[in-house]
Image (cartoon, rainbow, N blue to C red; front, side, top):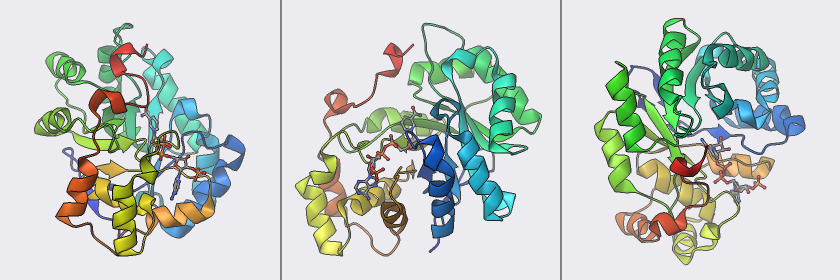
Length: 275
Ligand SMILES: NC(=O)c1ccc[n+]([C@@H]2O[C@H](COP(=O)([O-])OP(=O)(O)OC[C@H]3O[C@@H](n4cnc5c(N)ncnc54)[C@H](OP(=O)(O)O)[C@@H]3O)[C@@H](O)[C@H]2O)c1
């Protein structure tokens, strides 16, 4: 099975489908990431705040997979925005790596007003070879524009809450116009919304002989979005990777896109209110 990849503006290449480990128990992380790597995932999305970078690192070390075949993302937590170099060093040590492929500012936390300082540090960390690419998460356009005003570099990705109930294509297309690729977090609704029970997903699932989650992952992929569903269940880890044997029709894509609820559909905090 071959996972499509996206060429980032800085020339690096990211696999469009990965494995996310938010809320994966640190004790179980090494085994679940090892299973993901065995099934074929090569892109892992973690964060300092998840507390499971060590488990990710153990699975990588034991996999025997050449480092250059892996794409590893971690994120700078909010209380380290003025201390990014040390924070990345700690993450690298836990991961057992010399560099990550992508380092993200996890949230803008606008009240602190330190994300421009953090971004300047990330630019230096990239120059130093500690990360191949740099990006942001949960940024609104105004935050991106502030980075562009104060520095020479634009993030290559913005990782945002994105699923059928919260879509914001006008905003996301504006990011894309700045050369920023979109990564979806909570792509399956995080197990806290009923999105996987939507009849529109069930109809497409029945038509293609797949599960609603597989339909939803295809919807993200066919929208050109980078996606890394999380599962702590080995069967579902494999299921979520098995999404390249079918394609949603334009009508199936549109029926899912029609489920948008705008701001009402947001499951997590609004980036302007999370400090
Ligand atoms: N940047 C940010 O602020 C931010 C915030 C949140 C998440 N993220 C990233 O995005 C990744 C994905 O988001 P997420 O973990 O929050 O939520 P998600 O991937 O949307 O949903 C995970 C939930 O879906 C269930 N699930 C997974 N596969 C399934 C399947 N095939 N059928 C039915 N249910 C299934 C999981 O249950 P089981 O585990 O029991 O299978 C879990 O309850 C995270 O792991 C993390 O890497 C980033």
